[in-house]
Length: 207
Image (cartoon, rainbow, N blue to C red; front, side, top):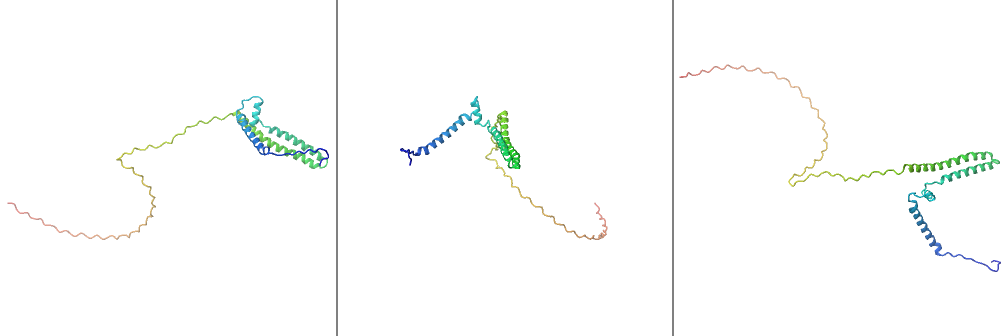
């Protein structure tokens, strides 16, 4: 209870409009605004001038702010390491010395690697911008597959013979060795029989 003669009480009541309907309306407005910004401004080529052209480059990621941010963070990190090393110098000399050397070296390597990736990306975009779009390849009209001419079929012509199926190769049979024949003994020649002389025949006298 309050000691004042008048006490003020304030109650908050959440209606379904503020709890459910208003977030849905805000989400729809956000989505519609993002789509409109992309299709009506970002997607179009940069033919603008002045501040609008710079805004177009920023929304298309042609201008990188991360490179400047990395350099700023690197400077802040180096100053922090140096100040903390000086503070530790009066109590822990070797710890302060190690922190000063190793801390600066590690910070340099980390930030330099991150900056290297950004520089490579930026140089690639500049090379693509100078080269321009690649020439389109000539489109070759598709050719219909060539069909082999079909010979005309006569009604009385004999049907074409189908090629015979290839026969399986026959394995060569091994040659059997021929048995040697026994030599034949020569037969003795028989003497020829003597021929008897034939007497001459007498012819009868003619009248």
